[in-house]
Image (cartoon, rainbow, N blue to C red; front, side, top):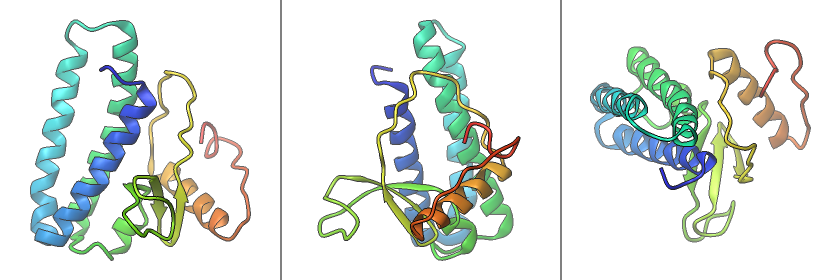
Length: 168
C-alpha cells in the first residue's frame, strides 16, 4: 500500500497477464481451471484487507484495484468455462493484456510496459487520473477496448459516446 493506485493496477495487470500466459502454456485448460481458484482467493484476501484498519486513501486505492481484479477473475472464469487451452485462443488474445517488453522487443525498450490486444501493441502511457474509483469493467467495456485498439492499430481514432463509451 506504499504505491499510487495507478501503479498498483498496472502491476496487478502485468502479473495477471504473465500468470495466465504461463498457465496456458504449461497446463492448458486444466491450468486455467486451477488458476481461477488462485485469482478468487487473492480477491478474497484483498477484501479482507479493505475491511481492516487502513487509511481512506489506501481503501480508495484498493477499491480501484479490486474492481480491476474482479474483471480479471471474471475473464479467467469465462475462459475456464469456454475451454480455453492455448495462448492463441481468441478468448485470450482478445483481452487487454499488460506485459513488460523483453530484450530486443520490436515494440519498446527492455522493461517498458506494453499493452496488447489481438494484433495491437502499444507502449503503456503511465496515465494518472488521480486516486479515484474505477468504473466496473463489463463485456461491453471489453468490446469498446477491442474496437479502439483495433482503430489505433490502423492509425485511426475513436470517440465512444453514450452509455457504452462513458468513462472509457
